[in-house]
Length: 168
Image 1 (spheres, one colour):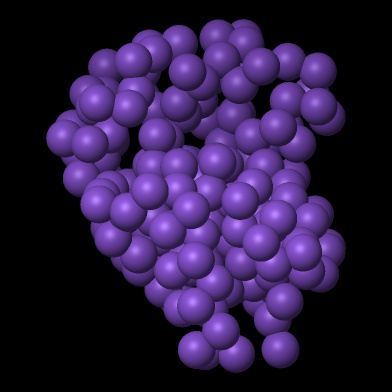
Image 2 (cartoon, rainbow, N blue to C red; image 1 turned 90 degrees about the vertical axis):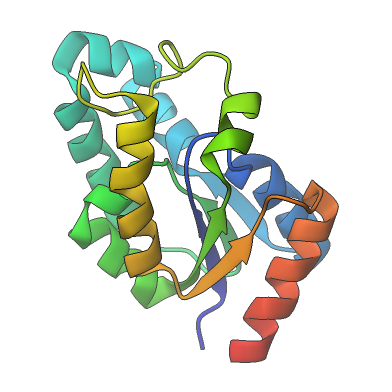
């Protein structure tokens, strides 16, 4: 039985905040792959991209996620984790993958630092293009999709826990 839950979705979907609440509610540990990268690289995500490009950030993300070997944890992934089939296959083996689905309109309201947030994207790629590209990947890898547009963070955490318990 898989004991981890991995949260995937766009930047601003609430993966980290909901993940912390979910971990607390379930008595699980919490790990944020973006923070893991920053600790191990001793740089912010934006610094990694500025110095070595977005494709290198994705490669670093793949390595970090592929090394996660924990039980009873909520894993909040970076929004670009879905570009790595290796990382997503690993997450699927150790966890239930939950996609926090948020409309582009709601994401725009939540993200005010799109250019400096450390989002791994092509230099000239618009937020809309990135959104469209990633939505297909999130849906491909998700075991469970949660509409995250009208629920608050506490309600989302409860819905995720209930949804995962149904498939365990």
